[in-house]
Image 1: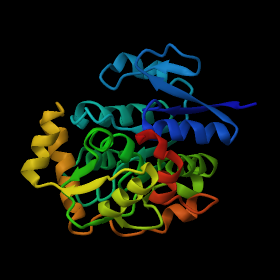
Image 2: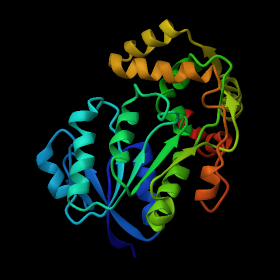
Image 3: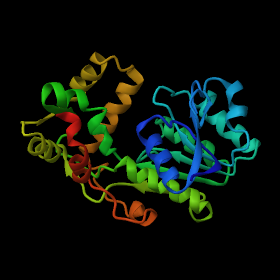
Length: 279
């Protein structure tokens, strides 16, 4: 039986948030999950845009998993004040899901959140590279309906990281916050591959041809806008993918292997486990 613990997980309904909740529960704890309505068991109502919800959501909380909703880019009026408020009422340790390269890409909203955290102590920053789960979210429609992966990554390699491993790493931070305090980790999978290799593996698993079509910058922006993505998100997504051409996500970091008890999952492990999603 899980033991109730004073941990709040924001973004608990998303890909990484769900993995964090599952890993914490597997470790024998029952985290509190933040949601906009707080209507389900184990949930509390919370909204970064509604400061009246902050006090109740953080009541009795000493540890926090912080995730930035993609639609929130105004950090100075949302996550920044929230971090300061959390500290003011006694939240001791914050694990923040940032993004690879945030320390060098000051224009990213994640970088600004990191700066707010750096004003305090008792934080752990996780900087994952590209999620393996992007294959089932960001690229899902292109694979299902057009039998292609369409991104402006050229021939760049990506060390895709599995969200399940990020969840386990977060659970490890909860078990030993002293060991991981005031530390930033780069999280990658154990192997770097091209999108062509991903397409080839999907072709084999699905028994139909999936192709990788390198997109141009303008072509990808147009593609995202056609999906009704806001300009801010489309520009960030395009910039991150273009960076792959120059090896920005090809490096394999050792941190994840040291944070979880088993070998990190590769992109091929992920595809083997979930290929039925694209059938």
